[in-house]
Length: 339
Image (cartoon, one colour):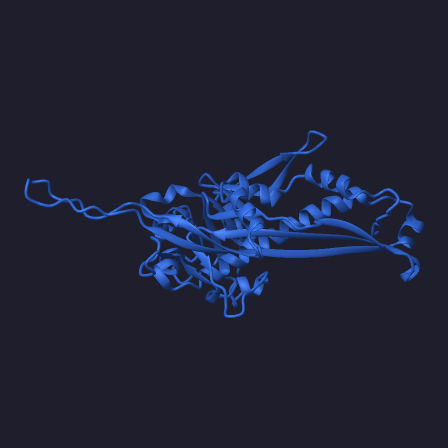
């Protein structure tokens, strides 16, 4: 039975505080694994500039250059540290839910607690959909060998399903000796089932308010957190799956905020009277080492379809515009398999 919102006893601030106490399973998995690097400075910078939806952020490179021979004759030539420039865009989303007064009249039940729980999970799903759309888009990048080096495609091999060695092979191909930066895998339930059958997946448990341990949709694979979600890309054949591998600081993250994130509105006439809950959010998810490219007519807030468009993304370039960031520094990879 649908719930209602009664303005006589509903308070937006109380609702927000209540929602904040509920577990955000998906977002917490991203945060605890280190995939999201919270950047309060980005939110502050966006608030200070006019038109706070797109920002360019300098990135510091690493020192390098060939070492010189010290023989009393060779001149010592100095070099500096390179810098890069990354474009980031804010994603704005909004949603409203409404219910009729009559629903309360025939049930006399207050659904506020359940509604609060569902909106928390709803926004978790929205955020994860945003991240998955970005991941789909950036693997269309052809510059700097990113897509090729960060993809392990075993779908056409004699054994096209994941095995004990698949994860290790994928992260080594992407990052070489730096492979231990990877901490999270986001996979389809069919891939998770394959790992379960091989006894390579261990599910985590959560203790509820009654002290009872219950399984979650989080697991571990070779020491990496696994988030199971059937919204990851599935091939046209229905049996080719993409598993995303993410590492420390894979995304810079900022909750930019909206002027009025939560409010209620009452319509006393329609259908005998109804109440509405309206929510808004503006968040930044910027993949490390990858820039969002604005088209000729700038995008204010990209849709998921625009985030999935390869032309909207590129590897960050150095200050001279002649070189890309080393792809091995980007803690994002994928596995394509038949399960």
